[in-house]
Image (cartoon, rainbow, N blue to C red; front, side, top):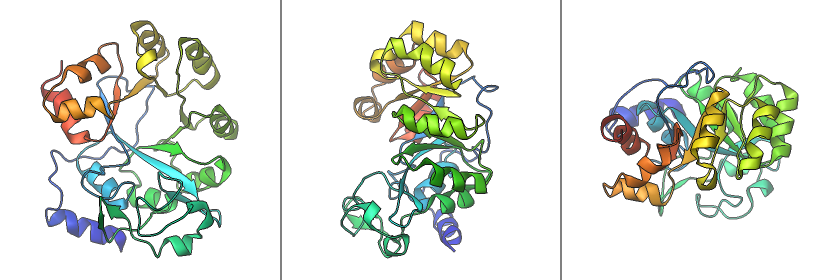
Length: 275
């Protein structure tokens, strides 16, 4: 029912798509050309963040990767929510881990200060809704790895989910379960890079300003991994204002996955203007 509602909204023109296409399944090791765009908390400028509608917007607009956040309810169900508390994004209050799924489903997600008709989706609902149409960066906001893996296994989404966490204990738990899981570790310093590459043989590595150097980027790409960097904040703002200088700086060393709050704008910039 939710999917039917979303499709009707799209047909009614709620979102203006710059292009269409399925992100589908990808083989990171065999597809390292071009720069991909990742939608932060799905396409949240057009729908409540981390909602099914925001995910549908991202898919319809041809976004390469959709970043979403996963937490666990009181009764052990993985749901999609960035914050520890539901206060900012819903009409409820309190710690999400103290709510059962049934109680969470009585809440509605906000878009800014306005209440929408969207509800907090479970991870199962997301994977079922988008099966074969999207690749997700799953930002692990929980250490209950087994509950998350159980859902992903149920839908056979081995090539549709990338596991991300700055906590190596969480990534280790994912890697121990099966090495076919796609993993994105984060490196904050040069000394971490070789260890991360040797330990995880990752499909993708998250770098930051301090690790965005020609040497580090060349090393990561020499191992067949993509390089993720955030445009969130200043770079996004500058691009929105028509200034591409910061975006060019982000990608000049070889970063080839850009996470942004403005995925369509960045996608068009990369395609048409930024060389």
